[in-house]
Amino acid sequence: MSIITGSEYIDRIDRLQMDIWVDGHPIEGKVSEHPAFKGVMRSQAALYDLQHDKSLQAIMTYSSPSTSEHVGMSYLQPKTKEDLVKRRKMVQQWAMSTNGMMGRSPDYMNTVMMALASSIDLLKGKENCFPEHLLSFYEYARENDISMTHTFVNPQVNREQFYFEDEDDEPIATKVIDKTDEGILVKGARLLATQGGITDEIVVFSAGGIQDKANGFAFSIPSNTKGLKFICRESFVGGDSTFNYPLSSRYEEMDTIVVFDNVLVPWERVFYYNNIQVSNTFMDASSFLPFTLHQAVSRQIVKTEFVLGVAQSIIDTINISDYQHVQEKVSEIIVALETMKALIIKAEVEAELDEWGFMRPNQKTLQVACNVFPRAYARFGEIIQQLGASGLMSIPTEQAFRSSLRKDLDQYLQSKADDAESRVKIFRLAWEMTMSAFGTRETQYERFFFGDPIRLSSGLYFSYDKEAYVKRVKTFLGMD
Ligand SMILES: Cc1cc2nc3c(=O)[nH]c(=O)nc-3n(C[C@H](O)[C@H](O)[C@H](O)COP(=O)(O)OP(=O)(O)OC[C@H]3O[C@@H](n4cnc5c(N)ncnc54)[C@H](O)[C@@H]3O)c2cc1C
Image (cartoon, rainbow, N blue to C red):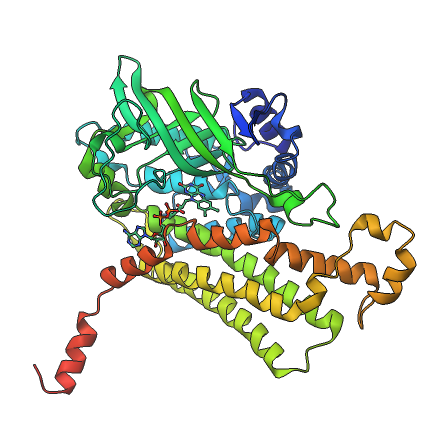
């Protein structure tokens, strides 16, 4: 097998018959037909289909090192700077199809697994570690174009610095409760898993900060494994109409709480367990950060371009480009866009081979980008709200346009540049992007999906070498 088509993706997910709960009810029948999932699954399927477009195959795929078949470019382990460019182009090609609005298009997790598999030597010879399982899972995912969700974070019960959960019988945070000849048994919950319920597999890793070794492990299991349950938040799909809900009808990815009720993880899928040192250091020491951030920033650039397009469309339609504060606000978006573009190129230019021969983009530069973007994205929402003003509330639905109100709407909602229907289309998009449940979730996603922004900036502060600059000041002041 190699790259799959959209319909193969959908058939595979429907066949899994996972335990997914929406609004207190289990999904029965095909998940791809459920109102909460059908739109996003169609968008995801379109991404898989794009890999089969002959004119894009050189961008989207490469030749498998084990079979020479076409496999997804996001699985490529980069060995040169040109490979990094190939990876960026692939990510951006997919992002163009979703306007960067799907944070968890499959290239995200494909990249995570590629990064972790590129660092397996860190696990070699360590207690309860199985680097060979991690490598063979990466190869399995690559060769079968497996879709994956993931969950790294323990439930938000008590975030005190030295909190130690004391719930042995009924654990809250997922922990290993037993091991058998067949594998490890895990029980408890993890959150969140974006796209939980619409992927073949769920990858579970520890994000660090583990104090009890039973909470530290890494594995992947099929999403229909016995005892595994996905509890969805309320769906933010407004409806099927792409006029009314241009974004949520297509890109609402869903976030799920994941419950492991005595789930057996077969040994061949355990990457490590019961090793506190590895659980707390592997992710940071691996190439997870540079490679995954490279994927994320590539997508965020495409998303920023889309935001810029929306802002300028509002300006054009109601003709407000003459005002200086309007120009300044759009310039803010342009500055963020060009900053992100410059940072990704810098990260690629300053990439270096790691000890295993993989070309890592410059991590510091990408850490800067992931500190810039969450703040910038929240600001984009504010800018669009300020530019759109009451237009963001003058947004009758498609049904209203098909009713006897049409004449009024055509008369009173026309704008300098557009007829009423076109103008409302633009404003509904701007509203959904920045003010709807879907839109504010996007802001929260960009703020938190790569971890807590506060701790991300602390991470940058502590890892950034400032000594040479302090020395320069001291030399200047004659304080050597
Ligand atoms: C839309 C969305 C989708 C997500 N999808 C996924 C997913 O698919 N997979 C996944 O694994 N995770 C996912 N996450 C979770 C994400 O990784 C976490 O939100 C992030 O790591 C922060 O953890 P937390 O939410 O538990 O916040 P907390 O750690 O509980 O933080 C809450 C507040 O307390 C502060 N705080 C807590 N501890 C400290 C500390 N030690 N030092 C300083 N400040 C502290 C934080 O700054 C924050 O203001 C998603 C999150 C969102 C919002």
